[in-house]
Length: 283
Image (cartoon, rainbow, N blue to C red; front, side, top):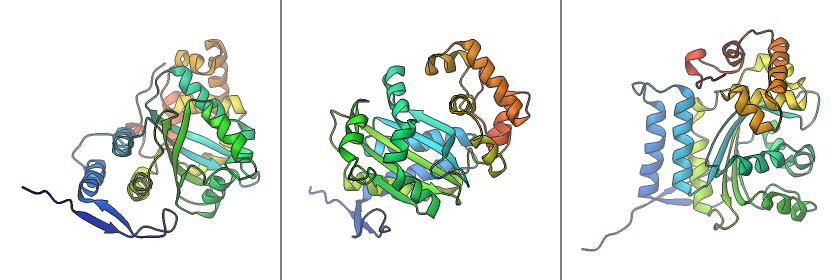
């Protein structure tokens, strides 16, 4: 018996590739299998868990080691001032590995010099999927690429899904330095699936708290991300390398800043769908 592979041609936007992209039928079936459960009204899963399963499925489909899905808000007044208000992630081999990556991604210098093309896409409302060689400006590429490889990772795909001028849903998939680069097929699969899951991109966005959030200090912003992700104060202290007492102080300042009295009220300020849509909260 001779088996023949079936290919399905799909025209993608110029932000992914300029030519017709052809997927194997098995890829198309797996992409549909990712989207279908996310829309199933009988699954009983909240929005956070639907996103978790969706992103983990993409990671498996394209062979990524780690993924990070963030909701971001941008300042009207300060160029390139972008704050993450929600972060979901999976795949780390250790907390130390995670800390190395986050220390680079949250570096003001790294963002100011290396992420301008990404911030421009957000501001202009362009839904783009970037790969290696498409993010860092040529004049800084060697230096920034070396800083990124120092984290233990080299290859990445970053898909940007702006919702309006100031709000964006973005996901990054990463492979460690000992792996092969992502392929054109991997990039096309990510763009095709992620950009068409519009109902999942609303999680973690609330325009009314945008300017208030951007007035937080850098450490308060970092603490807020962990609070919204459901981490306990002890876990936050370990991740940030500070005392639990300091985390408690940051949390009190954040509660006062948003005029809330509990973690649940804080989350309700950011997440659509009410408290039933939130991840589990620990203290």
